[in-house]
Length: 224
Image (cartoon, rainbow, N blue to C red; front, side, top):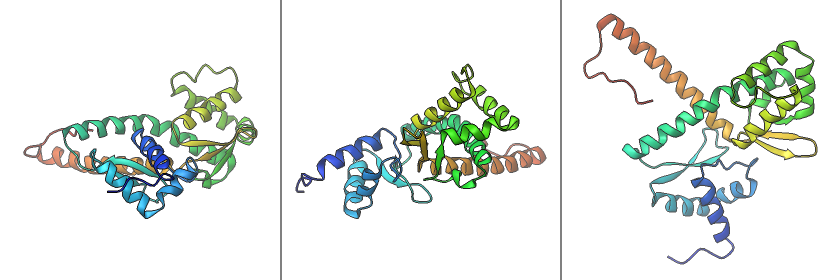
């Protein structure tokens, strides 16, 4: 197989490194890398390389972000997947609560979607004008380690925005205006929410059946 064309090799390496780091490549957080992956030949090239190390190129449900996922599930892959899932679960409630808070503050449900913009100053003004939203902001900060001791409400909001940007759910689109954009990674967050809701319903049905009939033969506790 001939080597990568010189103009493609640097992009391939960057995309590969970002995927291996667990990044989600979307048009808002990584426009150039995402655009490169829209090319069928580039996707095939990356996918073939990932397959050699037991991974595959995956896409969020709505098709906004690319990420690396396990090609198959063995004991080691299950362990890594469980660890990743636990990390997302820890981020899930604070991030969802923050997006709901932002939606209520701006009175715009589109902030829950990838590509939506959040302006720190406008968000702070809306929260500051509502005692209820101020309490919700404080409660949200209290659930996150290291944020509850912020000196002012604006400092608290700024730290939250930076935290979620560091986690990859927000992108600083304009530093001077303190303008953030919701990234495509939020779609993966919603997939995890749906998964938890679905399996909670299944688990509830199983528990009811066990209460009526006793434990099913061969029943074991779930790994996650």
